[in-house]
Image (tube, rainbow over all chains, first blue to last red; front, side):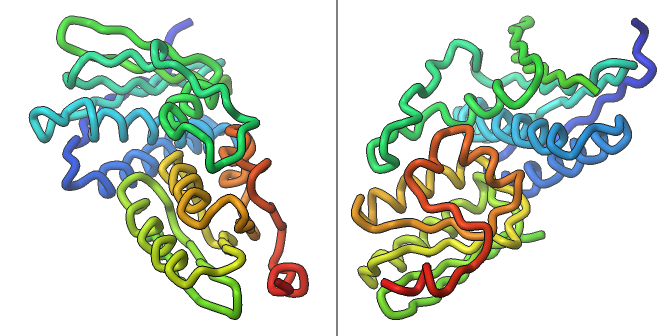
Amino acid sequence: MADYETNSLVFPASKEYLGETLSQLRQYVTEVAERAGLEKATMHRLRLAIDEIATNIIVYGYADRGEGEIRVTTSIDDEFVTISLEDTGIPFDPTQREMPDNFDDPLEEREIGGLGIYLAINGVDDFRYERVGECNRNHFTVRR
Amino acid sequence: MAFQANLELLPNIAKITISGELDASVAPAFRERIEEAAEASPKRLVLVMNDLEYMSSAGLRVLVFAKQKMGAGIDIYVVGAQPQVVEPIRQTGFHHSVVMLDSYDAERIENV
């Protein structure tokens, strides 16, 4: 099926401006969701998913060089909205991260690692990672 | 909306009202309020979230920190959270470890 809308934007990825970038990304996702007519709950999950992975890219992916960029590409067709984040930070495949499975444990005994990735991957209908050359690409797809 | 976290100390209770968007960039400010609250050794921690529009896993990690810092015996109340905030709390099973209330029930919350 042919895309009827595709666009791409670049956001700065530096810890110094973490708050600004995350806030702009959430705003961007909100606008995409509104254009695509996504349900509120879907929009919230998509925003959370992208915020979590973008945070990882900015805080860990570019940790060694301090700053970089995240290219965000959106495509909307009749059935799906896909937002992709592309970065050139250290290779990181979220799908290979061990997922937390201690959901019934008391809070004080909980491991805190992996929560964000868990929410990101489970918050969208399809999550895909690929490493292309020097780039990490994280693709988030939701059904319209 | 910018994130805000205000601490109020009542008899036996530490009440933190958080509003705006809670992501990784502002979670340290929330964590600081928790540390201040823990210094007062309250019997209960109440988090009022009616005006919290967004919470990522960074907020969840602060909840774990709160439970560890305060001690397992101190109940944490999460009050008035909007659906988009409740969802990540439930998805990760955190609702088993905190008391979730739809609205501020003073009789129930402040009767320690």
